[in-house]
Every structure is written in structure tokens, then in C-alpha cells.
Length: 184
Image (tube, rainbow, N blue to C red):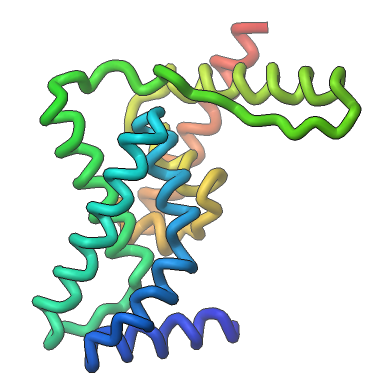
């Protein structure tokens, strides 16, 4: 709860004073989550870094130009900007199809190489299964389980009602389970 209040204070400072320190603090809070979200969709570290920079710049400009509007959720705004930036990125490349190029999973060397290898193979199977889902399902699963967002945040990001998000998530998980089980 304290973290939520700190974030609200930072948003207030950002909107009322255009405080760059407040924005820097919000950046620190969200950069890892946004990076992971974008990388999962793009698959290239270089492209991800460029997009994340662009996303935060667009967000800063939006907040600065809409200072009279109340910003209810910084994360919601940030993820909407990220989604739109990813769409723009693929439109520019004209290569919307392949999202699974260069997806790398890093597994730390803890001396348990067999368990690490098994975990890595399981993770790769799940990633490949997720890639077989339609885009809508990929997105809700990523937002819920990779980015660990709650249903209300996903609802705001996707522009769907919370019930619709729950239904979509349920259907996505059911379909993912079918795909994983059929590949075994």
C-alpha cells in the first residue's frame, strides 16, 4: 500500500510541477517491467532498448501536454503507449509475423545444470506454446503472469472490462493447456 501512495505522490508531482525527478523515480519503478513486456513481443535487445526509450519519452510528452487531465494510472498509460509503440514498430518493419526470433532464456549457473536445463526446456516449451496462441491471448497471459499485473490494470491497458479480461484469460489458459498437452 505504501508503494501505491508513493506512486500517486510521484504522479501528482509529475503532473503539477513536471518534476523530472518524479518521472525518473517512476521510470525506475517501471523500466524493468516495460522492458520485459516489449522484449517478449519484439525479441531483440537493441530494438527493445530503442522502443523502451521511445515509450518513456512519449509518456513524458503525453503527461506534459495533458497536465489538466487527471492521470489515474501511470502503469496503464505506460502499457498503452508500449502496446501502440510495438504496433508502430511492426508496421514500420512490415514484419508482423515472427515474434519468436532470437528469444533467449538466461538460466543462471547454480551448479544444478540438469535442473537448469530441464527448467529451460520447460520454459521454452511454454514460450513456444504461447506463441501459437492468438495475439489477444498472448497479451493477457503476458500481462498477467510475466508482468504480474492484476485484472484491473489489464482491463485499463486493453480497454476491455474486467469481466471480459477474466474470460479472455480463462480461455487463453485453457487453450495454452491444450497446446502444451498435445505437444507432449
